[in-house]
Length: 231
Ligand code: SAM
Image (cartoon, rainbow, N blue to C red; front, side, top):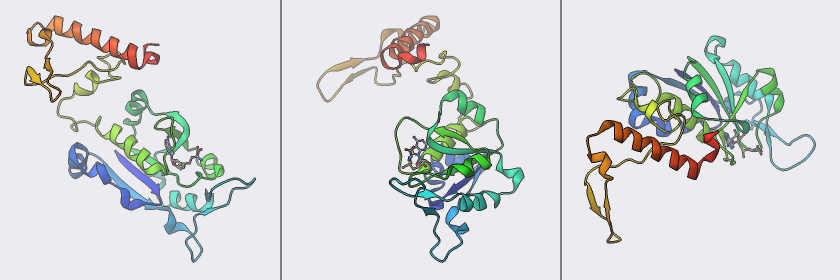
């Protein structure tokens, strides 16, 4: 999988994606990226990439001609799916992530300031994806999150191929949140002086009972925290 990043801050990449599983996968060539500096396509001496909004209002808007020039520097065949990270977009979820991992190339446009001129999105059929109902100061952290969610699903990146299906939002958890995890020691005295034990069922060796308990916990947690997922 290859990601083209259109950004004013190319040095932010690979950032956290150069570490741990994603970092090893990058070294192996399971995924690749190219970070394109939008500012390199500015045409004036000051390297201006933004201007004031038509109609007035706060902040600056990124210019369409400069973003387009940056986009067109990527060969057409490597542009793939074009996504603008935006709080206005459809919210990223595991189903969307799974679908994105079927793509070989994805171009991610990272906005700054008030965002980008609408016309470049229209002219190049950018779809808009949000990583949640809050506003970041730029699209780069959103791009990294989107990339991380995709990369961990690529073949060979996670040790155990079943892992993703057993996690929150996975196929084996029926799209619900995951059950609680426990490891050694089986009895633990916390700093507050209380003793916390691992639930007996998890030490029983009875796999059917363990499975049942996990499903019940999954449902209970989802009901309490994310009742919307039950729909
Ligand atoms: N004026 C915009 C609005 O109200 O929707 C917010 C602009 S924000 C300060 C600057 C950039 O951060 C956006 O262009 C977008 O690329 C990125 N961004 C902010 N929040 C985001 C989110 N929740 N998901 C994805 N990208 C986001």
